[in-house]
Length: 314
Image (cartoon, rainbow, N blue to C red; front, side, top):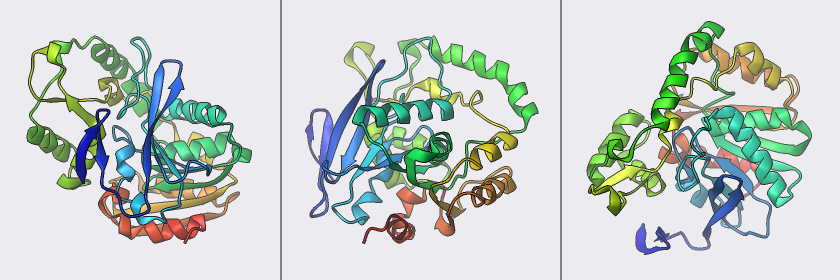
């Protein structure tokens, strides 16, 4: 799949009729990177990846859709090829993503949008639809229903540790950044995903997720491009009551795809509670499919027809 390198990224061999373009969207702290599949003359479906993943998570799914489908796959801040937040800023993950989406919608002057997200990206799609119900046509949430729900005592007890970890990562010096050879890097990634992503698909994610170590660091090999501060997610959770209240505000069409075995949810009932609350004010299609948590990357053939039908593209 990889040919010569162009502008630091690999030119791809795509199926007939498909096109994809690397783009940069300016933001106050730098840029947000993206992969725009299909025609630029159409307003795209906005696709958002999961926590610590990147826009490459859609590379296996989108080529199964009709070639004229327009999809903008984003690298969230600190992920993939997007700029990291400046020193001193924290990632609040779920909340930051809503602001980012609104910023991008305003930048392109779009009105009614459709969103597709996996895991964290699905939670952001849910949150955006709840926050701007008149501005969203459809959302597709893959193996998630809402931002991670935690009991209040869990959130309270984790606050201090999360703050200390953030400050530790902020002060991480270059000499402490680990570097590995390519195969070792892929081994680490595969182990981290615990079977959710195959080795070949880990390599797809790492096209945007790793980079050669800069020469001035005097180390050989590769390092992870994502911001280490992203590892701290404890400041971004919400209670079930809050998630259900957001769910009550969603009025667009919703497709929720839950993978089996998928993510091992601590409380699957919370997931299903959110889906059921969504059904009160929204037209909800809930589908269970065989697959890992990264079903869109590992088994896209299991969901592509469901997505095509929901979007009304054939």
